[in-house]
Each structure stands twice: as structure tokens, then as C-alpha cells.
Length: 131
Image 1 (cartoon, rainbow, N blue to C red):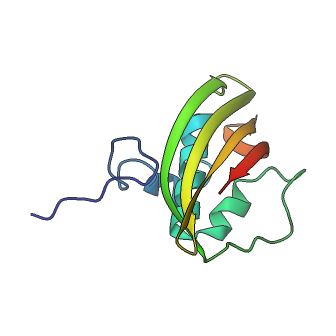
Image 2: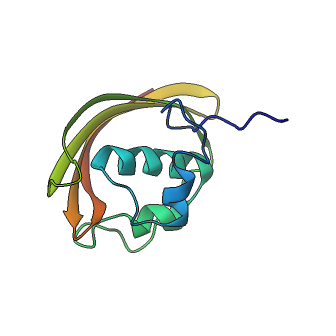
């Protein structure tokens, strides 16, 4: 039997157990951290429509072009504050590693999330890119 691939978000679970269900049902992430992990995985897999769908309407761009020269190579969640099933807001700090045209770099971001009804949405992030 073939082993199922690990989820790109570094949760330790398989993609089928972790982020794939959220990609199939964009409103299903139960926490801000789960949404952030599924959004990272969407960048890995090139799922621009998922990223737009999970972006808060107040800050969502009209379109999104993913840089095909970037290959996302790893995620480390540094901190999460609030963002649970009963919270209205949440924050997740993370470092995402990548290569662009073969040159390694990282993105350190503090992302803000807001829950509308039962759905977590990405609001904005304060990001620092390092090559």
C-alpha cells in the first residue's frame, strides 16, 4: 500500500486528513491556525481561488497572481493567540520557507484573522521577507 503524502503545513498529518477537507469546503477550518495552515498549503498547491475565498472581503484583493518561481518548502508556526472555535479574532505568527529561482528565503508573518458566523477569514498580515 502506498503511503499518503504528509501535509505541506507540517502538522504531522496527511494532506487528506489535514488541509484537503478545508480546500474542498473553504468555510470548514475550526480555528484561525487551521485556516492559516490550509492557506499555506494552498500556496504550495497553487490554489489561488481558495486563498481569495478565505480572505476577508474588507481586505481581499480583486484577483491574486501566485508567483510560479516560488516553491514553498516548509512552515513553522511560532505562536497562536485566540482564534479558537468560540473566539471572534485570532492571530498566528509563522515562518514559511521557500526558494525563488533556486535561491532560499523565508517569510515571517503575523497574520490576523476574523470569524464571521462559523467561518474563519484571513484579514491581513505584517510580513517580513528575507532572501
